[in-house]
Length: 77
Image (cartoon, rainbow, N blue to C red; front, top):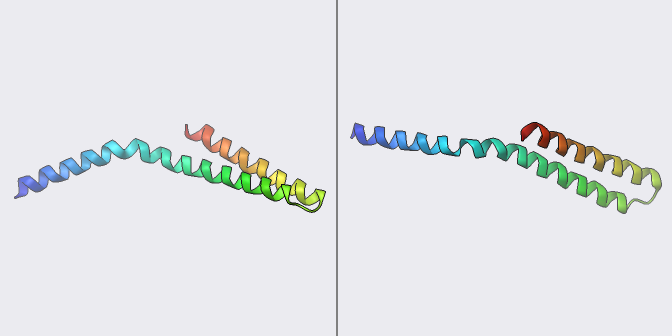
């Protein structure tokens, strides 16, 4: 019985080891997707703004979100 558990544990650890590289990229990809979604939201809000200063504020926020996505991508990949 102990041998079966040892083999099963070893197989489980090997499967986890095979999955490790994908897990590292998932966090960065999620952050990039989130920042790009924020940028799109800010751009839509800028399009619906009723005055120029509000539009400029949302456009600046969109630019900052896109820059943050680019920074994550540059550092993660």
